[in-house]
Length: 272
Figure 1 (cartoon, rainbow, N blue to C red):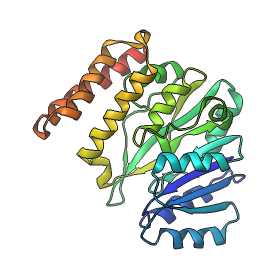
Figure 2 (cartoon, rainbow, N blue to C red; figure 1 turned 90 degrees about the horizontal axis):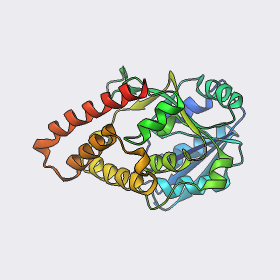
Figure 3 (cartoon, rainbow, N blue to C red; figure 1 turned 180 degrees about the vertical axis):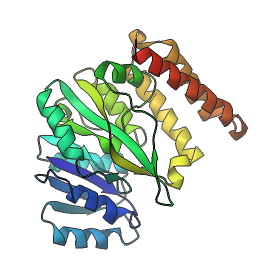
Figure 4 (cartoon, one colour; figure 1 turned 45 degrees about the vertical axis):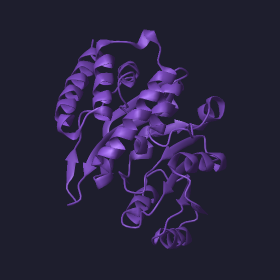
């Protein structure tokens, strides 16, 4: 197995994220970490961590962004499975074991995520929304939004070799574009169990980032979805995305209302 991490100026949370990987109950993996042009203490921390655990291999490069960094690491990866970790997220100790058990028993499954909780800046753990699970339900949800947490996934590397790695045109929503592309060839699912924590940060609520994210999400849908995928929830979600992209800030509350309604529609449709 190969675990991939790309980090840029992550000194505040990096060590905790790395330790959550090294503390996995499943121990047979390589841990490839790219320092993507950091200007803080990230590289020195990586050197210290690598000196303590032979599973870690570190690489230093100029800043090329997350997508290209992950693709570089994928070229170096040797494992049958590939897992993703972000430098500010935390895995629970049983994450890899739980996912491997499912993946090994279901060869048609190509991507497996999990439920995730939020780790606030005050250190509190807040349960997230219920995760979409079941390959059919996830496929329906993918037509509307990304129901798979990037740092929770375990993927078959053979699928990436055969059908392509991350599209480096996408500096945002690169994971969503990949899921939409891979769902044509394999099952994508989520475990309902919470196996990771996503750290709350200012970047998560950045309006500028949210708009760019939604622009690339719409592009991914345009590239990979067909008329067969069109549904009322999909249209509602598209309207929400457009509102976030073009509307002034005072209308974002309305956009969030549309988002909530669309999510509820997707959940109901998934249970039919």
